[in-house]
Length: 70
Image (cartoon, rainbow, N blue to C red):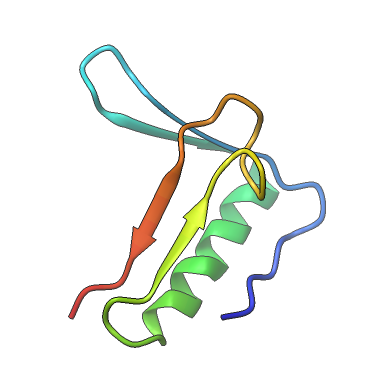
């Protein structure tokens, strides 16, 4: 699956004190995430995307895995 990133995107993932996942992104980051979700929706069940600080998220971000189910 080809991932297309909007120029200037910034995305971070973390958890808050209650354990909730917090995704924070600028406009370009939100557009990039929307494209990822649309692309993933067209893939087969079990397809997934790994996002982390070494490939797309801001430094210090938690790893994020987005998976398509049925």
